[in-house]
Image (cartoon, rainbow, N blue to C red; front, side, top):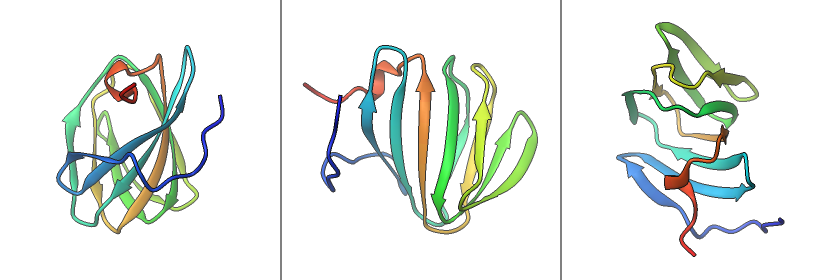
Length: 109
């Protein structure tokens, strides 16, 4: 599967947090997040393993009580079921991969 760059297809998932699925397969799904300074991703968990890369900006990520300031170029991995949250410290762009595929993130046909 190939998918070309487009500014279309973002959806607001929380105040200051927009998400777009870039591409997906049978076992993984890759998402781009546009994150506005001051936005908060509340504490949550899900069964999917989640790996991420911060393309630009700065966030504070808390994974199971382990807090880390993440800068552009940093990456992370969150085990399935682990509680995590984030505070957006600067306008940021993050790319994350989920496995297995998050059905709720699949694009509309």
